[in-house]
Image 1 (cartoon, rainbow, N blue to C red):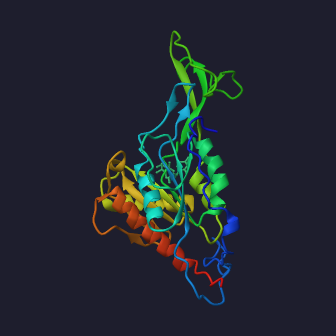
Image 2: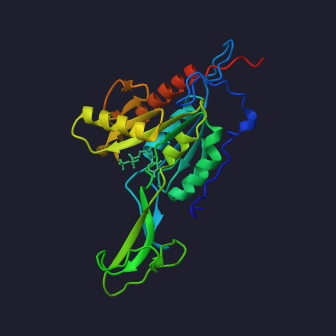
Image 3: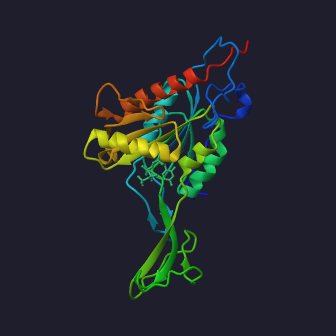
Length: 289
Ligand code: CTP
């Protein structure tokens, strides 16, 4: 688990305190399998929203890592908006210095592996997962002497395993080759195990020339990961206070906030409203009284 997992607060989203969920949506690929309530007498508006935010730091040694420029600002804004709108929110936050002022359930991660563990614990408690975290696609696996062409990369070759716990790699004469291994797609994995009553939303950061290209790439990513919706935003969003984002749903619809680009706080408030309204419409619950 991450060294900097300092701010753990119970999420308060345990399954015991929720009513049974009559799902309103068919299981993917299985039409007609949704458990629909006979009569809908009450629609519960508040839902449990799990948000991931910030970068991952993948260690090369005890003092070095591979990271990315994500600030976590968008995900923190989403958590703040979710709380302000009366939802129960848990925020899984990567290494960032940005403060979280909102009283949400906060758990910290450092690496993609840490985040995978937290998702394993938290995902089944949520109604909506929003993966705003910039998760690594590759992490250091092996350190070998020599240039890539010179280093023996064949399987079974003894190399120095990379681990954050093994101290600081010393300066050596000559080059080193750092071998990266793929990181599992956490979003796709969550989507693959979601219940019919859970909504899984991703973020896609794309370098694009046009708004049409942004939507096209988002649709491809959404289909590849089998998720319910994706927020597509251009590269310029990173470390910016505003976002020129668009929400693409699996049913093909595309939604945009009233004004663009939008301050991240305003975009967050809009996105939470849209996602919660969609979730409530698809998951109407009978009155429990
Ligand atoms: N994501 C994830 N696990 C990873 C990488 C990304 O769960 N190992 C999630 C991110 O949190 C985000 C979504 O996948 O919600 C899209 O991330 P992005 O980096 O835009 O896409 P990739 O899947 O990495 O594809 P590409 O690098 O081709 O853009």
